[in-house]
Structures are given as C-alpha cells and as structure tokens.
Length: 406
Image 1: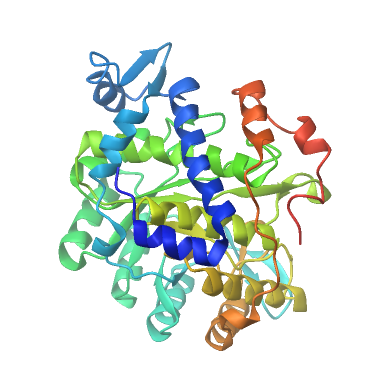
Image 2: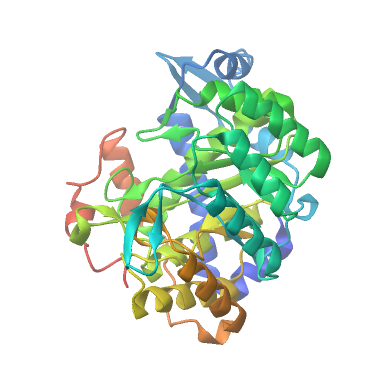
C-alpha cells in the first residue's frame, strides 16, 4: 500500500500531528470494519473476484457477506493509479451533483423540472470559467444519452457521468476513447454496509470496460455512522475501500477515485443532512487528506449550504467552504457552486454568484475551526451497534451541538 510521505508532512503542517494521527487510525478502523463486519454482496462477478482469495485467507465469504483482510486491501490499493497520474490537478472545484429540480431565481422557489437547455447552460458556464475545473450532471433529465452528448459538446473539461444502461455504457466508452477525461460515478454501497444491487451489474460492466470509476458513499453521522469525526470517516472509508478493492480485482490498474462523502444528520431538520455546517466542509477536507496520504485520487463535497433560498447565509456558506478548502488543500470537490438545501434545487443565480465568490476568495478568508483528534467512542459505537442505526446511540444523543458545529 503506497504511503505518500511528502503528503504526510504537508498534512501535518496544515492539520496538526494529532489530526493526522487520527486519519491514520481512521484507516485502521476501516480495515477492522471490512475484516470483522464485511459488506453484503450478491453480485456474481464481485463475489467471484473475492472468492479467489479465500484459499489464502485474504477474504472470507459467508452468508452473502464478503470479509476482506488488511493484506488484500493493501494489494488492491497498490494497483490504483496515484494522484499524480490522474488527469485532474489538486485543488479543483467541479460543478457536480444531480439535482432533481431547478430553482426559479425570479420567483424564489424551486421545483422546475430540468430540460436539455439547462444542461447546455451548465456545460457552457463550466467551459467559460477558469475557476471551474469540470462538471458532473448538475441536474438530471430522463434521456441519459442526450445529456451525455450535450455535456460533451459544450464542455471540454473533465466530466463525470452516470451509467445505468447498456446504451449509456457504449456512449461513455465512445466519449472516453475520444477525450479521455471522463469518470463514471457509482454509489456502490448503501447502509448498513451493503452493496446496492440495483447498480452493481452496471458497476462491473464499467470496470470491465476500463473506464475511470468514481466510487461514492455517504454514511450519515447519527443515522448510519457514529456521531463523531473519526467514526463517520471510518465508516465512509470502509465502504469506498470495498469498492476500490472490487474495481482492482475485476480490472487491476483501473483508475479509481475515492469519492467518500461523509455527511452529518441534523436533528433540527428532521435528521436530514446539513451540508452548510463548517464541520461538513472539514469532514470532507479530512477525507481528502487521508486519501492523498494513501495516494488515491479523491473527490469530496464542500462549500454548499443548508439554506432553501438565496439568502446572505447561502453565499456566506459558499465563501466559508471555498476558503477552508483552499486553506487546507484537497484534490477535487463537488457541489460548491449551485445547490440549495439537500442538493434538491439547482440555482443558476447561485452558480454565477458562487463562481464570482470563488474567484475572490483566498485561504485568509477561512473561518477559525478546531481540528478534531481521534475519538475512541466512534469505534466503540461501531462495535456495539454493528449493522444497526445510530440515531439512538448515546454518542449521538449526548453530543448534538457539541461535536459538529456551525
């Protein structure tokens, strides 16, 4: 398993020794989760890929769960192409995400169904602004092929796309052959540590086709992960490590991106994720640092908001997120420009203003924030709750407003 010693020094100077020590323990905790709790999986090719390692004890398959040892994880990570070999440089902000609706910036309300014209406009804005390194879909329309083509025709920068059909896969292969700077996004797992079988066949097809794979996972502190930094980071890291291992066993050396997206449930909003917390930005920055230390291409989330409308706070959240990311460093970030609460509505006014904010922001604008250290209670909760939910865990109920802050 490659360790980037230069990155350890850089991370230590930025985050502090105790926080880097926490990140290294997060990795060890994720390995414990994979070996002792496993991941539920029925997809035949993934199961067969791991089954080959049963004879030497590097994997165990039992009752539709796959248990992976540290040795096998190390072998798999060693074949992932590193950050320096990736086609997107560090500190790159993307227009990303997939909002189901467009926000009406004149009426001040959401709920407009996206059209191909919206997709074209997003792609053209991404192309025209240097601060935007690339784009995901932004919004979703029904015709995947039409959306892919529109994005590719209007934006030459790196793209990430979804593939959920044979036709979409063929078109993605054509685009990758033409331009190369393409990633295919999958949320391979879902809580509690289960492969999402609705998409697992498509995942295997994309990996076998050799397309760069973007492996997302978003455990939520207080719902599907412990309510502390190290706990939710460990659970997120474990889920993505499973996907990274599966990709390397199916197609050794394939480009794979760690897109773990640790998230915080907020009881003030009926336990929905709160993307506007400064703690949300820091969680994702920390996830990026662990990945860069492991020399894995990394794609997280920051600089969005929990505001439903275009309030001053929505833009303050944007500035804070950009500044924190620039102060501490990262590889790639999605969601920083156009989204409102819960990533439901895509606002073009917010997109254009957030681009301006990003151009004006520098690391000195970052708010003060306390760096976390390792919290043993996170693993205690994982070992106690296992594959259950964390809403009633004592770590959760006793720490609202104390660990994750505005």
